[in-house]
Image (cartoon, rainbow, N blue to C red; front, side):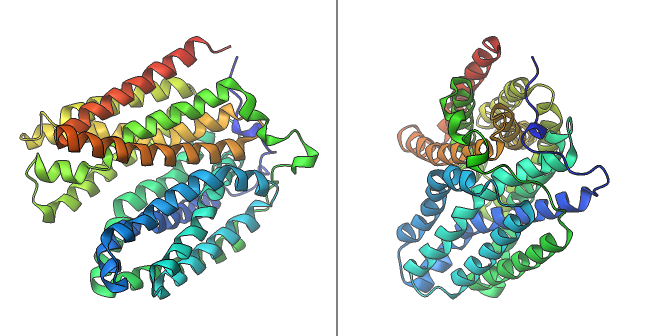
Length: 397
């Protein structure tokens, strides 16, 4: 029995529609959204000094963003699933533009908290509906490739957006970085309004079976659990990759950023391969890239002193790590059946839960066993995810 395709959620776009430009616009929107989410990590020291607060307090706005996404994403996505996509995407980008303006104007931590809370409400709605819409535009059999193109915005933000934004902050200040993001968000909102075709949205709750019915399906919940475990494994090690490179591999601090940029650039290959394979065998692709990532994470520490071997380990790690973003998203969306917008948002919530848990687990591991332990701990968690995926494959009915 084949897995349900993304096209089952809503009718496909007209065959004459030009899908390349809308998907490109969504990819750039993804770049803006992820850069807005993570850029602040590199700006915390300057922000804390300017607002006269501690680094620890400034860091709480990062936590606020992640847990807002986790808690509110599924509910908001279900509530907004019926809104036409063009209007929804345009509104989300305008909200990001306004929020970045508020961040640039912030004079205290409370203004900054509001500036971070508001866009965090829109992020999971965008991901839930953008993934569904990309599949809608591409048509049956091409959903994974289309979603992977949108997800390329994630990779681009991690590779270029965050590092370049942090560098730009040195010349134009942290407020200037938010002003730039606000301007680009506004520009893409206008392009979205002009070039996105009119697409059907999901039915209102009173016109179809409640989307929340998927929460009573054990197999769907198993897919969500698999994403939580996978992202916990991913971020147990990735959160501390810079520290690992500096302390174990002896990479000078001034060069660590370039190594991270290379890690993300190589990972773009994984993004493409993951999008291609997930359409055919979602759980098989999951197992494959978990094994590739686990092998890379496990090899990094023993190969840290040998930079050639270290590069090879980082290539495997980066490919598996980045591939799992579209693989998890498409896999959960397929499992969601007719409630794919809500399913995609639940996967984003699962990912944010995993990001938070991974940072905690990795931090505890470093505290108790040293930075060299994160690769082993992360690989053990990846092995747990592999076991879950294999059990799901055996019990597929």
